[in-house]
Image (cartoon, rainbow, N blue to C red; front, side, top):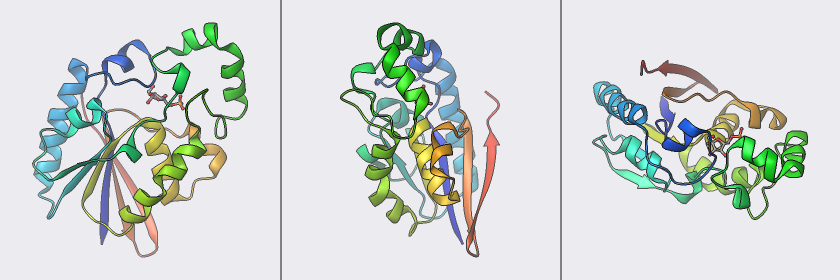
Length: 191
Ligand code: F6P
């Protein structure tokens, strides 16, 4: 039986103030989540556990306490918002109102200026997805947009729905292959 685990990074200092993208460290709550994630995962005693994170410090810090081989993969980095990196949605509305309107209109295809679209993220994830399909006991620690794309792949979510999927912070998502079907269980950590 194949089992994969997914989590967003713990809350970052940018999550606290509502800024997108960037490379902020974890907030105090995010650090608490990193501790409970490590405890939860260790208690499962998974044979040959591997941890795959993005290259950004918030995912690396989230998994740092987990005793397992760790890979840091740029394919798992958050959607790159180009000229809009490190802004809040309010600042975006003020500085780039047209961009925000375009994004609201077609969030899946919308590409940030000098940045990426959800479709671009899906494309860079293809090699990772085909490798994940052959693995078991991998914990992937990544980001909201990337995890939407990965989970959508396993659950065959219609493309248009992907940018709106609910992938909350501080929640461990366990995906198991049962027969030909993937099954999802979520564990919300009390932080
Ligand atoms: O706000 C956290 C975050 O991971 C940002 O870094 C990223 O741009 C955003 O979520 C992606 O979500 P959405 O596509 O809904 O803006």
